[in-house]
Length: 351
Image 1 (cartoon, rainbow, N blue to C red):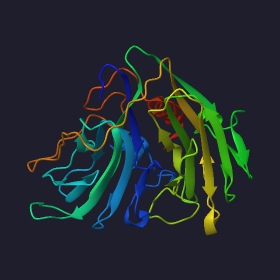
Image 2 (tube, rainbow, N blue to C red):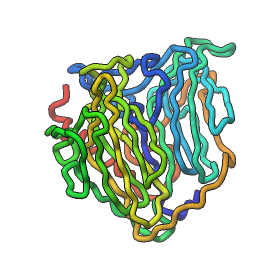
Image 3 (cartoon, rainbow, N blue to C red):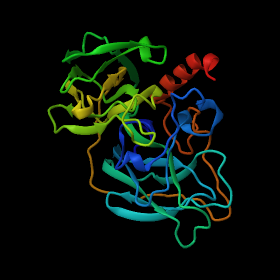
Image 4 (tube, rainbow, N blue to C red):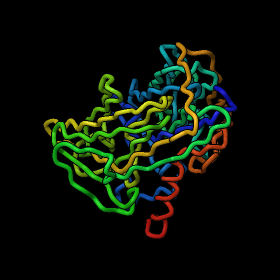
């Protein structure tokens, strides 16, 4: 990583569609749409987590960049887990004599080659030295990306769902809610309905709603192969009108883009359930100077962390901007402003 460049730590929550669960039914999560849910009364980022006691249940994440940090649960109910990074396996334990009071740094790798990486976390259950149960809990992760070279500036540009730059095919409806950026979103449950647009930016964030009646969709960037994502929200993996994340979630992210005009298309795969895709907004990170990194191969080296057997230690507050236990240049992920803005709107009326 070039510490003099404009770097950003992209925060990815457990509900975001850019993390992949091999079997959603193997995981339990709170229901953010429940009347009893209050994100401000627990330690987890945005009030949610994915927890499993199923041996070999996995969660995976693909990223391009030099560093990755993963937070979750640690304490007497937790067991061991495998971290598989680019095919290299490491076994760690989240068991500790006492519960962490905040999300715990389960894994970090901060000196990777600037390259495409795949991270998979697998629950191994209770192993020989674990003194407790066999649960594994994933809360959120952060991945580092470079937006611009040293000395450059970066401005964030938001395209709302009704921006004239967006071209829709198929049937789309609209929602109005203070939860959404700009107060609205658009949705479809039509098979092969799509939204396309062209843009200039070094990074792009696509934000949308998340609910159990959502499903598969593909993203094509610059004519490349379709990337498949799953928009179903979890809560036991059942399809239905339940378990809606009441705040925008990250449906797609790409970085290290050059100065050329890029084209992106998102297509809904409705399937037998006529599942939905929702688009809230698109955030573009536009630098004053473009300097994409030359991508390397494989892993350089890493520093990792796990709980000690004597007691759990925890990360700084997961919900605070700039609270992570690592150094970045002073540029803030636009999702932080989005989350903080939504929380500010919702705070007086949450129960």
